[in-house]
Image (cartoon, rainbow, N blue to C red; front, side, top):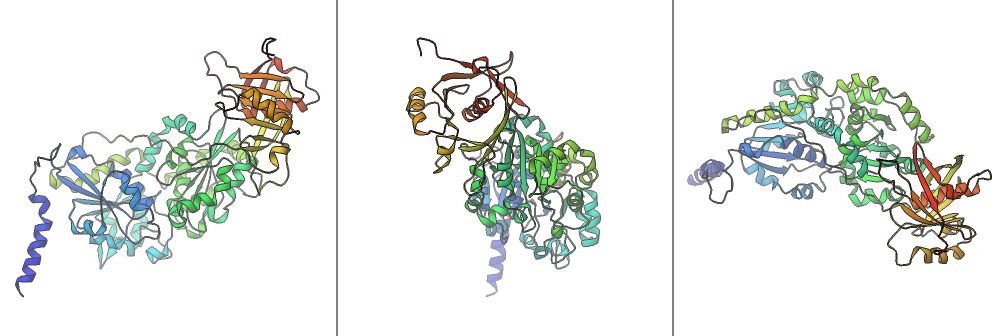
Length: 581
């Protein structure tokens, strides 16, 4: 029996030494065999996206092989395996990861079970610092998650060999919560925010993806998770925003914390927000896109989550619909942010509040709070990478010369519907030849009283709105039935219509007025400018407003200027030629 322990010991030693005994030049390799192996450890989707981001600071050309694993046990781990496997990276099971040895393990969350890894562990925050009180993890009602003794220590020893924080003040807080861990702490700034700032030059590209073009400004709704979040306190706010703001002046997108998606499933989230999406809301997937939305935004309506904090740090007009003070460390910068940021009353006039806050916006007001959370942002990548490479030096891996270049974040790929199919339209004949239009989406079950008149597309299937509409538009240019034939057929079937519009191409439409007159409309362009697109529903709405103004003094053949907010487009109208007539 005495030979059994020795056999097990020998097998274990062989397994642990297997990497060292591998030939350095395997004939199957295209490049030289790696010198060092690093493990990225994910526990939730939030920490997974952050650790993947940080692991890009490790260059494979320096002889580094990267692997990933999921530390099990989180209530928010759903979808994590599929996310990692979809990245085309080495993914190990937790059991396999704990049987192997690595030169470094990197995690953007911390849990005592990570002590099972045979590697020095470096932990980093997965948000803007350490702020949230999560007693289920910390066992302490006064210490934020990530800085607690329960998470950082095991049987009197500190588990991580390096603890990255975004600001020196967090090390001071660590001195109170877990002084044994202070020697391992280092202020590394925030690589995530460094990439946000490096992406500012891509703002126009991001805004184009999110529909913030042709005069539209972008409002982004941010919600963290829990009952104290924006979604927890005001679940109808996304729908209220998208139906209250004029659709031609505002685009609205939403960013929800990955824990919301993990806890309630992607299908559940999209179903819950279905009416808002039908009305034009764009939803940013949890894996990527929220940083581009921060860069692209004009306003942010959020809560105490890190994405709202990053938005304020990026000098965006940031308003809070929920503060989350019940679950924040009261001494943290996040709590100071929640107390000091402008508020949005979800029951009030949201348009007036947005405009008023923008007029009074002064980034300097929140700058002290931001600077108390995010330090040395411009050097974060350099400091973080240098600390990681220190663990690999014994394998002959040296820190690369120069500083790491933060790449711009990917453009957003929002979930959205093809188009809104019904609007409540108001407006005025603003000046001779100019019509000001405001369109607000109609939502079944939400709309009780018309503000103006209805304008619908041919795809609207509500039982009453098409027959009550004064404007109907066919938005598909490549239709089976020609535009003239469609208009001739639709006019007698919808007796309430004043204007029918059929798209001919991106800049031209066919227009029929009550009484039978037909015109071709086309946008005009200034020299050196692109020709603006022509929205058939917007065009029909403007023409209807022109028709119903008793003081109109010009004929449409003199042209019409469509105005939505500060954006204007000039439209020329051409009557049919005698031959065509």
